[in-house]
Amino acid sequence: MRKCHCIEPVVAIYSFANFMAYPLLQQFVYQRLWEERSNSSLPASVNSSHCTVQNNSSSTVQEIQRAASMFFTYLDLISLIPSLIVTLTLVTYSDQRGRKIIILLPLIGSLLSFLAYFLVSFFTLNLYIFFVSSFLSSLFGGLGTFLGGCFSYVVDQCNNKNHKAVRIALIDMLIGLFSGGASLATGYFLKATGFSWPFLVTVLLQCLNIIYVSLLLEETIQPSLNNESTKKEFIKKLFYRIYLLFANSTCKRNTVFLLLLLSFSIYNFANLGGLSLFILYELNSPLCWDEILIGYGSAISTLVFLTSFIGVCLFSRCLQDIQLVYTGLLSVIAGFLMAAFTKTTLLMFLGALFACIAVLENISTTVAVATFNSIYAATVSWFPGFVFLLAAGLCLIPMCLMSILTLNPQLSEEKRELLKENNNENE
Image (cartoon, rainbow, N blue to C red; front, top):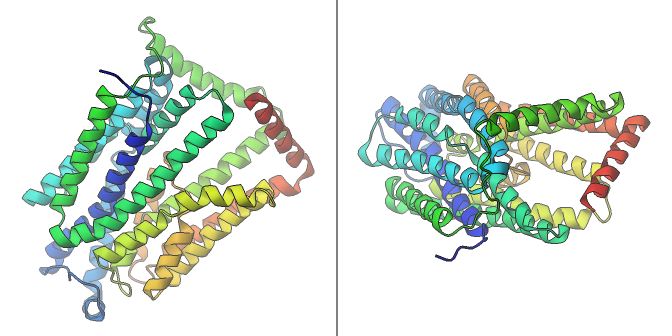
């Protein structure tokens, strides 16, 4: 059978399936908790009477909101350690054993999760089955593992720097297009058929992806047949390189590294933590969104994948890198502030659009989601929008750290030297 090097269909299908499943899961858990704790069904449409009912039983609604946020806290924490270990192992090992393994395993893990979603929904099983599926899925890696494998696959094929940039930008655009399409379609699909059939579609899409990768995708790296100690040695070399990164650098350069890493981590923590609560916040009073409006909101949020690349290309001609960073951080802060105080549907759309600047999977993802869900559970009774104020405030910290890099002449010069070295290596 003839094989190909086209990874783009895999990314497109994966994005569509995942961005269909995640909003569905949050709404499904919320609906089940609502039915269990209020002994009534969740109103099927968004209207003023729905919000009136919620306001008249605010203690019950707040209890359900707390229970839902804590449920997702535990769901994320249970997968944290296995996912980190597996991701580290797969990413380091793929350089010698090939890229397909790092792409295929996260697909299998997602399939297990989606299958659990469908079975629990179809047979009305216990929600705690999701904890088991989350743990098992984490043993196969996650979104970061998958995207790392896909980008590595593209880099392996591209010798030309411009061609590489175009392929990576294309993947980024596909993520935006298909995730937005999935979010938009999910609301109507859910309203027409309920939860079970959309979950089944995600299972079938992931099966299609696994078949494509297994049978049609060509490997870019021939597996190394070295001795059994290769894996351990490779991981040791990875940690040794990290050690050398700081040990062989000057104090000024290490300061630049640490400030950049700290800025990125705090931003990612605030951004992803805040984003994880949008759907729960939209289900609560005073918005009381239904599945269709939630789908529109999620779809608008994914427009950032399409607009960010164009925006960077245009503004980079007239703005410096640090000014682009400030622009991005200010847009995130504006989005979270708008979301915190929003009372109408239009403002909530704008808040979601401004806040979703980037979606990256790393260690801060799980920690941020768990932390912000816990904070939301503790503050939902007196101010549901507090988590967005916290996220906006945390985003000010990276701005201050980046300002230190810019305003300090010595650190600024060190940063320019690092950029020059990077450009020389790419050339």
